[in-house]
Length: 168
Image 1 (cartoon, rainbow, N blue to C red):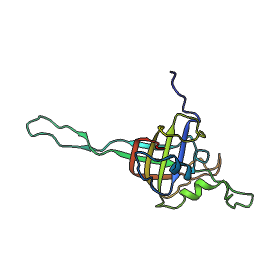
Image 2 (cartoon, rainbow, N blue to C red):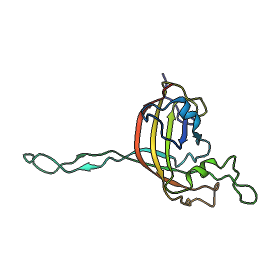
Image 3 (tube, rainbow, N blue to C red):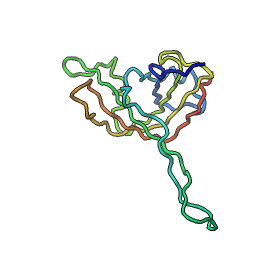
């Protein structure tokens, strides 16, 4: 089987209520969430594992210094596009990602699926990653005068399950 090109094959859903089981979100829970993949900038999208922490502990009998991996670390950053009318007012039908992410401290569960086309329905047995997150303070991007109006929203990942499987 050939390798799968990532282009257009990442789905991203935001849940405002925790899935009953982070290791097995249901199709119904995912359908109830807010689809974000068509409202987030692709070029700087980042969500997942970061460098692991290290610990400086070894047995007294060993020579030299050594480090081992400690707790896992996670991080993320989402850049929602703004959808504004000619008067600068939000287009409530399309500004959904900004509405969801704009307030610092918003608690969300972000569910990411790779493989099928982004708009394919979720199905039982599909692999997904589930990230419990809090949003940070939105920031104006460095390229704000050359592209679309958008904001960079850092997210702190409080818990993650990168090997979850969609339940029926």
